[in-house]
Image (cartoon, rainbow, N blue to C red; front, side, top):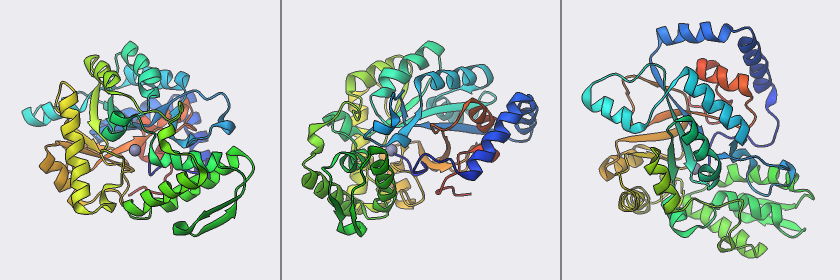
Length: 362
Ligand SMILES: [Zn+2]
């Protein structure tokens, strides 16, 4: 779940202008020249960040976090085709080998990543990646892989979408309001509350979600087909086909908001579990939520001690080569509102076309 997603469906005026400009640059083929100029001036690694790849027939009726859907199946195929044609898709393993041997990465390197581990990654994205020969890294939360339980933030959205009509009271967030009538309105309210929820410490977040589930009689243990994590067999199959698996903690908790002992547990146990279940040792962690309030120096030190080599944030940007911050790698989020031109322009000129975000560090 991301720190960068925008709530609601409105792109806003800034995004609107970027989309128009992206479309103009692509139509006139100016983008190719600008991109070549940039690659002469700057050598960097682009890391794309996806969550879910899914085609939804009726978005308004979808009772989960719609903003986690990064692309439809058709759009994802086009995006991966563009990567294959214009860039060099690589793995974190290639980066680590290059770092260790002092060799250079191929020109225009890109890494495709997925956070959380939703089962559409296996069902929808993986067949396309395999067919097109694009490797990707899937950051999974091991507690969810093991238990099959839905993700807490997404369940929070679901409970607000599906509660019986009436008053919504969440004392810790200062909420006491009537629940809106439609799922779309409720989801919008939930997205706003989710931002506020993420400002609490991790235990308080957990308590709010647990109370809400109980009051609505919608326990997470009930599960839901639209909010399912991948399982170990699926991860093994993807790894055997050349995909990489990384850690996204055990229970997708904001690591910097946990007491130190629980933070260490999330970082270390997830690696131990992945190393035990998969054929290759896990090298890379993606900090859940990933914004500036989700990881800190203590989290980075814990990741180094656990044996990770690289760490991904969810802060927008590319990574200059050679790396100065191997445990604070920046990514380029792919969002469902991005059309083809915008995606192409974002890859070519990331500084100008990254998705507008409340959590941009620059
Ligand atoms: Zn996440």
